[in-house]
Length: 135
Length: 259
Image (cartoon, rainbow over all chains, first blue to last red):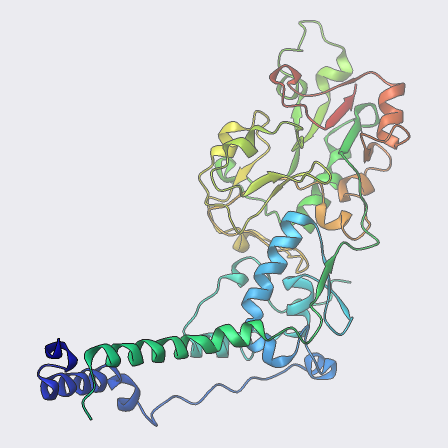
């Protein structure tokens, strides 16, 4: 059957595809060069001194929410509270006592990125930010 | 060059597969570094079934209970609300007839009739609150029998409060934070719309400390493993006659009272 060996109305089809491609990528090229600059994060002295977080900076930047999710479930449900990272260093799995102890500058650290990414996690509704020494 | 429709679709399909392959490859290819491990702390206190024995003979009046309830509410960020209907409590006192309904005789021993009784979550072996919870936010921890709350998951339906025969659960009708005079940053607060109750100081047990109420009770409250015949609670249960709250309901409370 030679009839189905070719694309009917080839010109119109290709033209339509081009229009479709242009329209669907419109937000990308329309906003090209107009992106808001990525926020600059301020590390506390304690966080700077520690050099590396629980995991590598890249990992934390991309995956901290998944890590915290795992921490939350294992601490609350399985009562396992010690996290040993691939380097063999151990940490108390606690947002209040470990994470927020180093990152005690919520406004300059957590909020800047969360605002930039337009996410509003409700961690601090319960976990008290900027913990101070209790003793 | 004349391209067939079939050939065009084949190429388009291959292209789509190619685009989706990268994340798969990068996920599979990440076997290099060792994976992190999650363990229990060596310092943690463990038991098969935590239980409490309260020696009511050691208490004389309301003042004796004050430090016990105060320390619990302080470390767990439980605020004091003036409105009785909004009250939050993890550990508190009630008269004998409210603690042990059905056991009140007309002519009751004078000491018992006057004495306030310390009450808290009973950490039942057969907890009705756990069965009532539609989200599994409250659960009985299989490893040590503590009935716990996952505040993250509580939707505030209050079925557990209706199910609990001991009134051990409180609901946050208001945001508790403004009512806290001082906060303990090591322990989270709650938000409006979640239920809360005593957690047998699970966060302290994990660090190798006994519950705060036991610590300040000066020996009037004992805490230990109910399944260990040599534990402090089993020794006390062996030596004294004890009662539990509303035993006929079959929830099997883990809090015992020496009267």
